[in-house]
Length: 155
Picture (cartoon, rainbow, N blue to C red):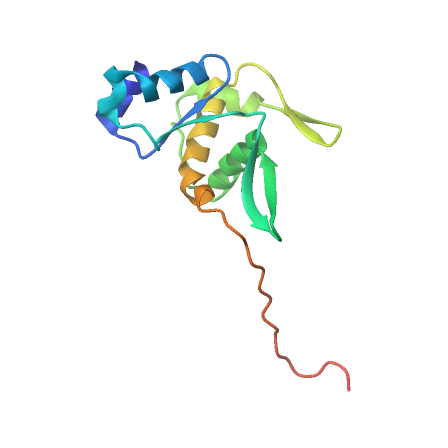
């Protein structure tokens, strides 16, 4: 009901939800129950499997994929570095979660710390749903190298 209320007041272009826990059931209810049909969430509401893979491109007929949670995190990092995302300066809970969230590498895979990450996960969903339009357009990627003409290097 909270998502439906936010939708009524803000009408976001996309809403991302973690499919873990109750998330999948929430997405199904919002998309299928008659009382939520007027919200027209189809195509805007997305559930994400943090443990899944997301296709970034198609090269030579093969999909180039990245782990969804890693992609989400890299989207946050990039937005922060480019100063495209702003958080309230006086919200200690946001600051605490972002500054204490850690990861380790285990068998070449990134493993994020568990717990105290609900805000980070919400931001992950928001960043990926924001990027979703571009990802939905993923098709065969053609790498085109334009030769650079220079003066001869060897004489």
